[in-house]
View: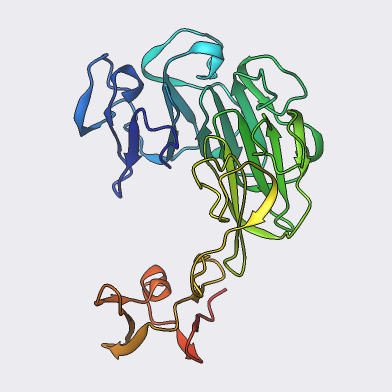
Length: 314
């Protein structure tokens, strides 16, 4: 999970080892030297399940469900009870088994395997969702409507947070709403999660620095927030305080793997080869294997008409 704030980059590869590169001590290598090549974070020897990067800090979930953070400790964004910076991964003392971690500009969210949400770091805009506007040095559980409601997906922007519930795919947002990124119709901040009314259920959520995007199960994309440079994809360059539909050309839709419904341009051609459905993009003249076949590592597609491919995989 790479950051939407491109100050440093981190990632992890198939062998479950963590590698980071670019800027200074938020790399977790124990020094303040930058590197232009992916370098192994030796302190995370037990294996990495998920990673995230903020502006000045990084975080990882190891295969045993523990959370580790490093980089700038300002505002408590490392969640270790201190505001001191750390050049090596430090353990976050949270009595939860984590499945993912998400870094904002100066706050961090953790999603437990049971679907509970915990937060720490800066909270001046309510981005921690704990009902307050102050920083937290240790993980605290997000309150309000999400308390007791299992969450399936999280995402964070610079000063706001968003979550999708496991049941019903409902969208909740909290934190700064100055640019409309909460989708609440108002510019004020929210100190606890508030449900965004509209076209739920949603399948996925992703936040930019000052935007929020969601995808429905049929692949339709909706966005809200700062659109001054056309980020919202709705043909305008203004802020949107409500979710508005992104309008791509043709019949393009976003692929939602769990539903495995792929919407493609009618001009695409198809062929069967070695038991796999291949698609020819007439604009690039490149044949590519069906996304769903590749995802599930087996043939699972059939054609219906000329514009839609469906996979009978749950």
